[in-house]
Length: 406
Ligand code: UDP
Image (cartoon, rainbow, N blue to C red):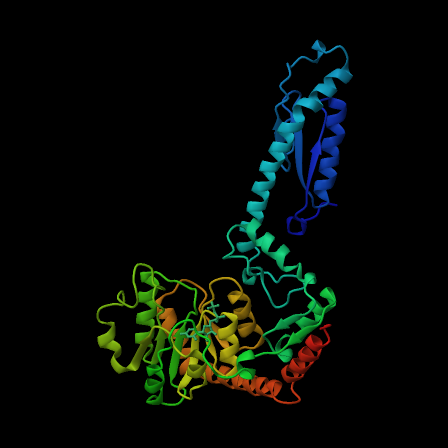
């Protein structure tokens, strides 16, 4: 029975036939049977005695040049003919297949981000194909190489994770089973370490004085971390989205993060006049202090892992604008599992931005997210206290290190 198109399993079978009728017929029949079982079929054949592709529109035909005269009678016997075909076709067949594999891989990579983008990835709940951290690593082959590299974790004798057991227990348990080495979940590290700054850049602490003057939970904090760059159009849309939201905002514009400018020179001319004292723009903020400040009620973030952890540790709900690497994975968890964010998925557009900010900062939905984020904060606080999972894991790590021979 023929499998419907949706059940095709993506495996390709390449059938190679000698250019003789008695060989080609069973090869085409085998192809028809395998195709009906869900395989895609490529039939490689010589240009001499080639099959008629219009009889099998469901197959891909791959003609191979055999560099022989069309007349096999020039050979003393059929065996010489077949040996010559084998010999002459080997290199062109390998070359054609390599080219075809490249096309198939490219199509696979494209399909991954188009037709299957919304589908859940088996075994990786709640991630969809579009959430996988494949973009940002160059070509599809580069992503595969990176995954191979990461899966060589077995060379480590233990793994230390900046996370909390209660939010990643099941994922880490699977990894632990697979790699058979201890995993120590001792996050959030910034809650266990001293508060001294770790920034490469000087933090502008004036923004904390500005925050002191704002109403409780009224400010949206905007920062896209240390690597994201944007163009002038996105900057303009962000600026008008923030201005039109009517909410106070603290915005980090990292020097060099806007294409073609040093800092904030490309902001729209009337922007400053429109927002006045309602907006504060800095080059780099003391982010952990900002998120812990009572005036901050929301965080519009690119959702790097540090920013995500810092935000949920302080009970601050988010507007997520992920770009690449792990940011889409984090966003997926924030929205579908922890339900503490609003995602700005599509093109940055001022109306969408304004609505997303107002939903977070003003609407009932935002209040619900804030309550969920506050629940997370309480649980995370418990994890780092004596008797909590991160605290216990830290003690276990210490014992593990001390067990090494001196
Ligand atoms: N950060 C900061 N001040 C800023 C912006 C970011 O201190 O103005 C810090 C933030 O607290 C976080 C780090 O930079 O610890 C960014 O890391 P994350 O993983 O969120 O994103 P990445 O920079 O790796 O994309």
